[in-house]
Image (cartoon, rainbow, N blue to C red; front, side, top):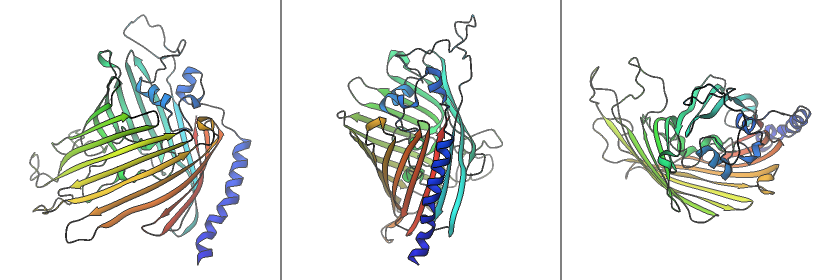
Length: 408
């Protein structure tokens, strides 16, 4: 039984080597839109892509402009001082593909390429004004549509004050899911329970960020609280009358240590009492809070996230339950670069855990628990080969995979 369970993973070794040889023979020479704009390497902002270096975070916060480098002739002369029109529309793509072996599915091997195919665009619309969006041409074999899409007002009132309007992830001020190196996700950000529509993943709303000089970064978010589903017959996105509010504070204790805290309150309604009514039969109140930290030790980075969630009535029952459903979860991530941000290979580890407490008369239940080992190699600056193995501790299942992540 043991040999049979691991035979599929052993088959992946020669396939991984074969993929490496093929990809070496056909290297990717193109670079994404921002690198093209400034004629600079992707390593200026990423290490490795898509993970951002501090300079990359600063570049994004400055509305995708490099204050210390001009982009010659990037805009056209139109005779209109109020119009900044780019000569060419900046566009880039990301393509991911994998070969997986997952004991839970009972399949020895699955070719999942393309797994993701994104078209991305971003840039400046004028002084202190920028935009960013991407469109999923294919996500797990389906057209997923737009996820990130926002307008950014940058450095308002001459201060480090930014306003984002559109679609974004509620967890973006914490750790950005889209920029992680592992296939395995930060699961606590996606978690929902019962009929609740609230999570820390994608939503529509407004985010305000403010950097206090020699002090913390402060962030406020106001969102619909129901994700990014399509509009209803009245062309309305929000499916109830409530809004969610989130707050975030982060402080650099030193060059090596950053600590932060997050809180969130949302309320959501079940189906209306009657058609065209604004009154709901039942509601669910959701609260989040939790600390996080990043420890940077040169070649090693450690990211820690703990999150508590409480739902008052996630099943929208009448009457409401006497006790809240409480969820405790988070993750610990470690990334090692042997040569710092110039490394061509790196190692990463990720531990996820989510536990639910349903009340005094019910034993706590582990909802999710995995441990992941990941290794990556930059065949080209914008072509990354990966090997990853995730063991599901809760279900005693295993997922092994090799693949590539390309940006161009």
